Image (cartoon, rainbow, N blue to C red):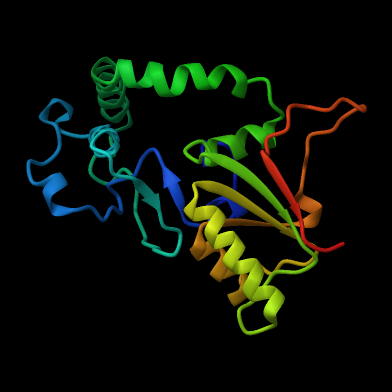
Length: 220
């Protein structure tokens, strides 16, 4: 990715809201696309970014769904690097001009505090920017519906938190990212990481701004 993360990083494994949906693989309501893309971006580039902005302005959400997997061969329509770059730069300027007010209100001011955070915290804040609050959930193991009553309770708590607009990061000692237990949390919109991947950003006894609003400690 542009942030230097692998495609299978934990931040790409769970359902969540996002600013932008690529038209390389996009499922959208018919009434929102009936008039097609804005013609100012012809022949290509930034038309799907523009559509995403319009969809969110109308009160809808853009949802990232990691369980939908497609093979997209990039740059097959325009494999001329010079032409591709020229179109991208031209349409970038058109996009910024069209959406300058929204970009200023919702992005530029937000980026001021973002720059001062440790690198992994910046990435987490990007992923959770559309959430109302952030929750760090610490537990000894990943819950599963068919394991015990504790699991059922934990999963329901996470479901409620997500429904209230929380970005939930669940941390456990041993995490198998390909297990059904982790998948069910990812489906709920829960970010799951291993205990040794938890980075609160402490360095030289200097405490950075906390990126979590609530920390839940379920078990030692």
